Length: 225
Image 1 (tube, rainbow, N blue to C red):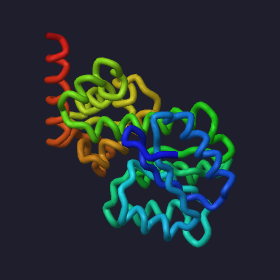
Image 2 (spheres, helix red, strand yellow):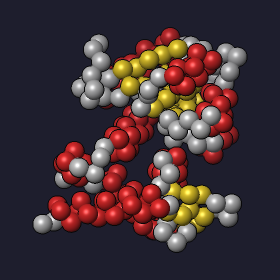
Image 3 (spheres, rainbow, N blue to C red):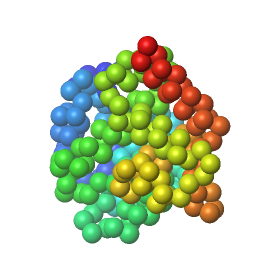
């Protein structure tokens, strides 16, 4: 497989070769334009790669020898490493999944269900978010806005609704999304510095977030000319 710029470069920390092969099949289907899936069985090696190499996002198995996926996530948090993370848990590990989300993971996948539709959609949605955040407010983003409205509009709605501070339940209602789906956007926007979450459980748009809203609105005005 040849590395291509169009697809993501992803680190998969997994000690089970069968699961690595399954993930490769998933990526081959999702990214026919090309991708690079770097895998390692050790959490320590994975953490070293995260610190020294570029990845669009990271997929961590929870059950790793000597270092769990949550421990890697904690080390990333301590080191202020903002690469988006998806955690892979075992069936029935709901508490671990919730903990991962609270620690800043974008989403979690269930082992044994990696090839199912929900898992595939989660990976694609994360890549969609990463792609938008990597783009400038220029021709590439302008072109993509004419083809996809969901991601950029959801981002704009969340930031607009959070201008003066808002609770999560109200934000879910106003954004017309369920808790799990909006959580992914909230984590991503907080990680990127566009949204702030305070001790009173309120979400507030930052100054960078306000500038992002303006950029989106300016682009939409250009599209409507």
